[in-house]
Image 1 (tube, helix red, strand yellow):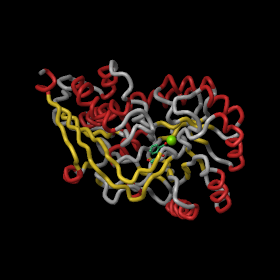
Image 2 (cartoon, rainbow, N blue to C red; image 1 turned 135 degrees about the horizontal axis):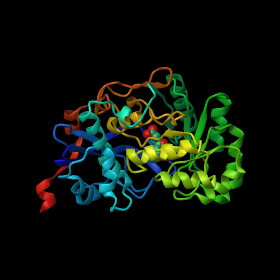
Image 3 (cartoon, protein in one colour; image 1 turned 90 degrees about the horizontal axis):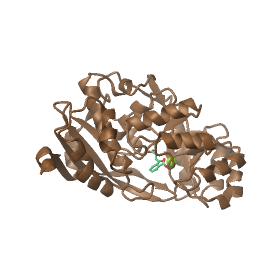
Length: 374
Ligand code: OSB
Ligand code: MG
């Protein structure tokens, strides 16, 4: 298929409930969507970069810039057979993995559409349903947190992850574990601690957590390996794993025993599959992370989660936890068993509500061949 043009579209979507991590609170998302115009196999992708460069170096504004000036021009006018060919076309741009992933993932959807296949099959998935967990942000009070956990357990979610930071850790684990001694519980620090906190982090071992996600620096493997030796609880790396080499290094060093795969963070589906494969080889279970995605990114996460080494429940949860109205149809729904059923339809199995996207759009730009050659 020939890539004729790329449309960038920034939409604004208020969250149903604010989401707070150790690096800050989000109340409304600014989301960058991309649309590939590909000879009738048009397809959408989502850039998961945040409003600020706090989770990683990227933000929606850096992504907008690098897509319009580098990545879209590298694609437009090219004929590609497969989504996986994008990575080589983008290779001379260093980093900017979330920006690259938005386009590459759209190209995989275009490929699936052209081949009349479900995206999950094209990615190499095998599962017919996937296991879901939730990520619960830092709240204003312990009571509010307990109520949220109660709601999500009642909805059937198979794993509860609590965002934590110094001052919002032992007391929340204590409170939640006291009321629910048996649930699968984990935590995510988003790099809020240093090795000087090792003794404090050792206290986490008392709460039978499935994992502690990214406790130390966002770019570190070495000190996580030192910390992992001292902890009974498994460390899971999120931020630090930027691709398959990182997963290999982390596995060899013993920096973690579990890996969070986010397709945006690692640069797109081909890299996400490679991370999955390296971890499988090393017998490291993976799960699919989330970035407060709209339905477009969410549908891509669902497809990815069908690969067989996605052995733990992902942060892939129902649309209604985030949005009053999602931009896909049907909205993502989670069954009382805490699972999402995988569609056998062509592409993602979800339709894009383009009229709604238009209504939510704050800025839009189409990059075309004339502009590229000029
Ligand atoms: O670290 O997993 C994270 C959201 C934004 C940035 C980083 C993270 C998260 C989440 C949310 O935990 C997961 C979700 O989309 O529900
Ligand atoms: Mg995380």
